[in-house]
Length: 106
Image (cartoon, rainbow, N blue to C red; front, side):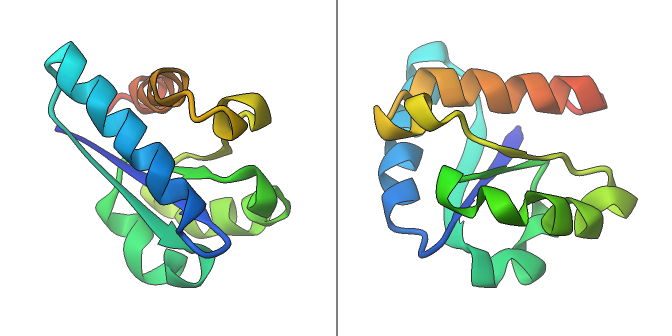
């Protein structure tokens, strides 16, 4: 099972994207847990996930958040602004799966 964490400033706009991603997971017949959290919850949540995707509004935090996950090998990346803005759950899911597969978790 894939475990994908989305993180943004408040966790609200990203929740809409989570729904689109979950729909895509169902369409593909995959098993995945996808959840959205605010950046303030990052420290207590990230260790439970295979990958963390950041909303474009918190891109400036990527370096500092990635430094916290490096020892656990959890990639932290920013979602493409166009994919985020248009709620392209399929594209964002593809990106998350690509990052997970690059680290060897599947």
